[in-house]
Length: 458
Image (tube, rainbow, N blue to C red):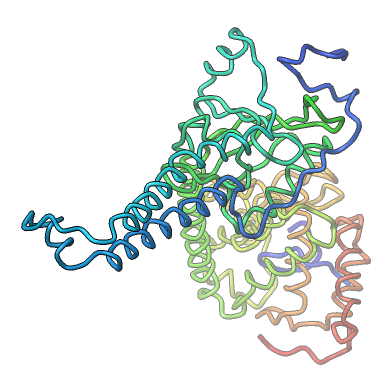
């Protein structure tokens, strides 16, 4: 055995250029823009101006109609009503007054039919529509994705047919509307922040749900500032890509991945449990090593992805010991050279087993190398220094520390402080000194971890 310590599974230590463009086709000119567009915040009421006027007119017209009919009934006598509905009489009283009431009702109808389009035309005239020539308009209409032009009031200057189809309205009924009118209330503030960032060139795209004729769907909006017609500040042009189905597919795939990952982890934990039940002294060993290895990885500044892979490998690092005969595994006396050779086979055998599982991390490689020593004296391949996977170097330290502080059939446990001293003594020889230093830092975070306590039998 390469280590001077007789241990079964852990080698424990011993003692586009710019310029003004034609008005009809303004493209983004970043170098000529004077600053962020003063995009307004969404109206908490979320009622477009034209819709408010329309509703007021409709309500007024309905009220006039009701009042006119009520006045007619009040002024008409029974004979007149009977004449109207049953043709039984020709007597009509108060005809002049009733004519006035009828005219008021007709006027209400006229208000709804005439004032509404006039008011709409007035409001829309506040937004100067873009003047695309036929060729340019044809290009915009050929694009299957929704395209929109926003002015500095966040009102739609122009849209293509795809945008109109998306919201289930005609283009004429969309132009002049505020973009927030098509965005759900709970995300309007997020949309406002994104539009401000677009106008300031901080971002080029963002996700945003939009209310369509098919319900609320998620879109990715690619947007850029452009030179507007009648404002120094930049306006915004955007193109929307429906990603609802892609997100749903992605979420389903992620759910499946998480399910498979959970099943794999449960399988590994089950195998580790089988390994530990063969030797009661190993109870909880894999969980403790995995926890400590994850903390060391975090202390060393490794990414969350790397940390997770190391923790997975740590939970299965001794899986190869199922090949070791039980009598060797629990033998209290020193092992012979032949028995040491059998012990050392567990790293390669564990890697062979794990190589048959498709992990997103190099789990098999880590398990195979977790008994390699920093100076090249370890096994099974005698790797040295940085040629050893960082995960294996971390697990080597965590494994040794847990083994030293745990009871074994062939020796008693030692204190945590003594275990740390041994590891530090062998830093740079058996163990990566950076990993040992990280362990020391971790233990010093809690002073009680280094107390000279009497080891408890596990």
